[in-house]
Image 1 (cartoon, helix red, strand yellow):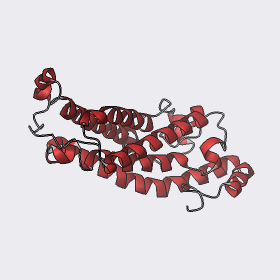
Image 2: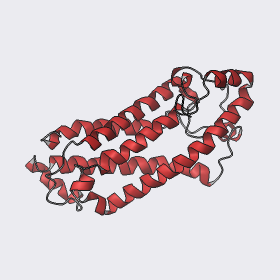
Image 3: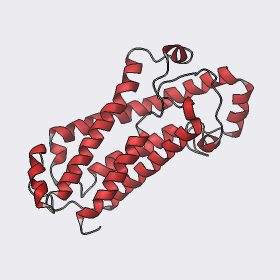
Length: 238
């Protein structure tokens, strides 16, 4: 591990940016008419899809801010004044460091964010968090969609794994400064666990729903694509 915790700052900032990309929809919410063509997500389903990513994003950024302040405060005396923002920050955070678990989390977040961005760029206006058939919808089979049919979900799993590893591995604010025992630590663990459980269910249900929806919309075109790309999430596995 690296001796100076200051080396963590660019890693934390870049991980936060990657997560922000992965959890932010590249397009506005579609019209009700467009969603009605495709979705059975009613009531709570639409609510969860709209607000759970926001709760996840806010809690992730708050955890990153605590990590950064815990790193910077012992090294810059003027930042000690910022401790009033963090009453949960304990005096001894000297064990904050870059560890293998932290680097694994950063790598997962980087892969997840970059892969999601690739999906956004490839799909363009067709990529929405809501299940949708858009006006003039086209079947996209290039980029990451030439390898698996639902690469954005695979990328999201990388980002989720990276979230837990980045913040709950040894050498972090959560584990070394008592952050996991604070209200924020409990909130992060709860929100992220709910999101992981919801995503696991969502992937099973929604990948099938999306396949059925696109097959009904595009017919033989979708069949030909599915014959070339039989894997939903992981090449040669599933």
